Image 1: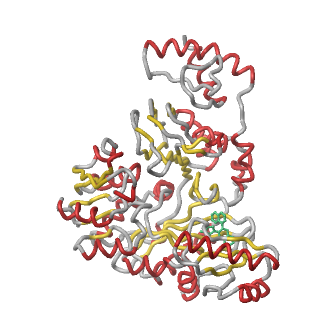
Image 2: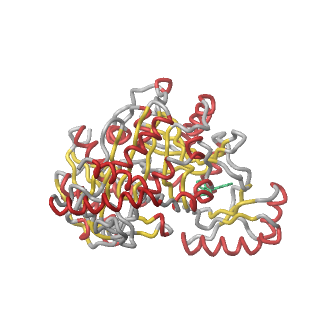
Image 3: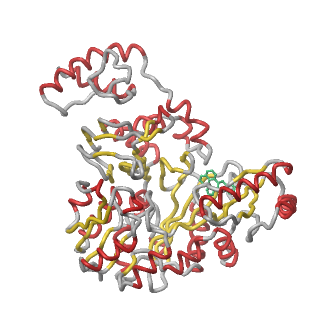
Length: 513
Ligand code: MV4
């Protein structure tokens, strides 16, 4: 049983972990950088320790200072959240060496899954399907050519130390092999300090489907079903859902069994995720294991009813999982939209500034996992994800409708966000049909961000906005109208791009006068 947990993270995930601790009667210690001195996670924890300057290299990435803070405050465990130190083998080891519990897998399991080539070998040994290819780094271009001839083009060169698509090259012609290998090796060396590159057959147009696993220290390993994560841009996921339209109960069982076999072979304990490519023909291939709590864990929580973060804490405290695999069946549908401080209309350029006003959606089936509030300053020091908006409904159609409704309720004033982009996705016919793959978003992006309100709506709303601007002077921040950057007739003094749904809402509000 844990008594006090230090949370080595910030933002929404720090708050998520504080909430789980509080529900279990565990005391919490936050750590914070200079920029985060007034952040919500600092206020919500029972104690807080300043650990350094604003750049994460001076604070959230300084393992020894974080461990020191845990020892000093009498914490018995550290939860790393995601990102930062969460998948660093040395940190998990250092936490253990300091006599503390690392709330995550043993360092040996992080090591066993860290290299992609080693993970592929482990998968093969556990009878888990991988994409045809090599399990060793390529020696030279001649070997690359021989392998490509064996599997057929196109092939994908991948960095063994890889992640996030760095050091990856699709090769569609034999003549390009040598130069692609050179550039992949150079990029891998720069990104990871390791130029090992191997080769796989390239799978065209697959989905990214991952399986959440949860294992205790007593030999039980459970699969909590899949998440569909194909809606991503430049290897950044934007929308996730559970379950996946492409996964039948039979496929779920097969993928779940494969994930459990892999996790057991890796000596895994605690929450982890096996990533797969799901081909159009229904075959699936193991890609890699993420040895942390993931951003998108809430969609799994909502369809399984299992609180993954609570179980991370209980497992770290030595408890055994009481559920049976057969009892874990997804119920209904959950969707998550990542609300980021990026401007979709401007190539997702990061937006900074003070959040003048924030209104989070509420109501039936809505969950807001946020890390900011009205008055928060959004800087370039950290990840642009401000919050996750997650909904649950009995069916996928109802979940999409609910997400659209919740997004309409969301107001973030003062900075640009991805909100309008998410509204457009919820309105998209292909998305509603579930016809998505890992390239879908990039194909569709232009039409998703280019939507402009019809002229008659703008004309009507211009009048309404003037009324609301007047009302805002009377009751500041109760009503906020988004208006175009051109300072057009409808401007209420904000700089947020406007969607037609904003105008429609402004018109509705105006009609109440
Ligand atoms: C692939 C692939 C197609 N074929 N492997 C990208 C990041 C890394 N984790 C694995 N990735 C891919 N591996 C083969 N053999 C396509 C991708 C890929 C991808 C995978 C998951 C989610 C988004 C993606 C976007 C582009 C490419």
